[in-house]
Length: 107
Image (cartoon, rainbow, N blue to C red):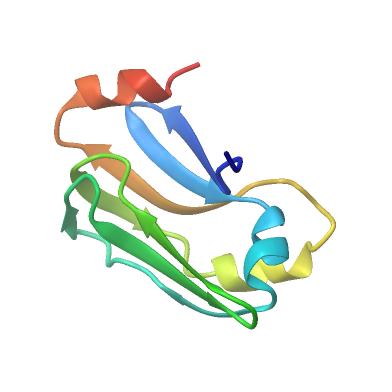
């Protein structure tokens, strides 16, 4: 089983969905990113992010149901600048509809 490309962290009861530069190894050069809007409601399992690359497309499903609090519009520039750096760049922040859903992601 492949290691997931997304990195999930919890901070102040908010789920943060991030990616590191391994994403570039999968999709190639990132050409476009389809993101939800701040204030959107998403359902667990719903496609919420689509990353279009020169070699592949990656569709990410929402890990929880909730409200999109913040979107990192500069993600495309940030991750492209750091092809050798495995520091995760956050993409979206989600406030869970049910805070108990966050427990499975806490370390």
